[in-house]
Amino acid sequence: MNDRYTCIAIDDEPLALLVIEQFCQRFGHLDLRTFDEPRHGFEAIIAQRPELVFLDIEMNSIDGLEIARHLPKACSLIFTTAHAQYALDGFDLDAVDFLHKPFSYDRFERAVTKAIRHIEAQRAKTPAPIVVKQAYSNVSIAASEILYIKAMENYTQIFRTTGGSLLSRTSMKNIEKMLPQGAFLRVHRSYIIPLDRVVQFSKREIRLSGCEQVIPVGRQYADAIFGILTTRDPS
Image (tube, rainbow, N blue to C red; front, side, top):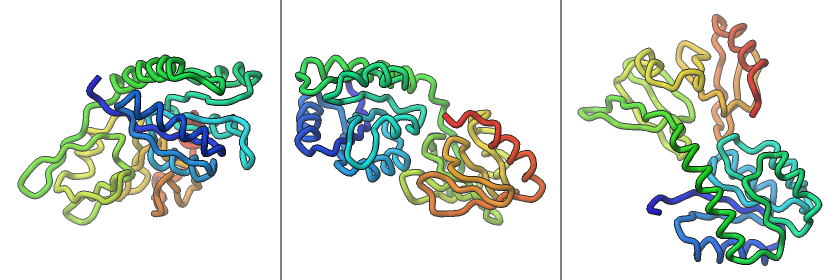
């Protein structure tokens, strides 16, 4: 195992997070962030799209099952809870596994190994990166790293989910052809967005998760875009 996997753990009990952190260090290859405030953890999940989420269920400020219902589709989920009666709910939400506290390292290892198999299957489905011209070289960028794309006179600006952007001489039309079919949408003469990041929309503007910029909707695109976003699968 040479790859690394991004992880977020949410639990309002610091001691429970410490156990997960120690087990992740022992397992290796897991880049973990922990949150004892569930809402902050959920915001981080939406912004950063980790590959694996460890999630408690009964927390003071929010129900973990509610968070699970709104996780990005690509996240692998492992529930960690002291309440075994939630196991059926967990599997109904497509959780990879259900760890009943207090759980041993061996049990944790089996759950994570199962999650990694799921993650690797997801990675195998990942489209090839797009390659665009920047200055005197070509730059490769994964479709999953694209927050949105904006046309700027003779350039195209690609904003990244990790922050920052790159300027390319590749035209919007050519970039649009390289993007995975059905995953991105031209919503304006000057804007292309990833469908799975839409959190709010109207016929005039769109808001994306992890993005402060409000994306305008072009008048000629409005009816078609509104129809697509209204009927899409929210998962």
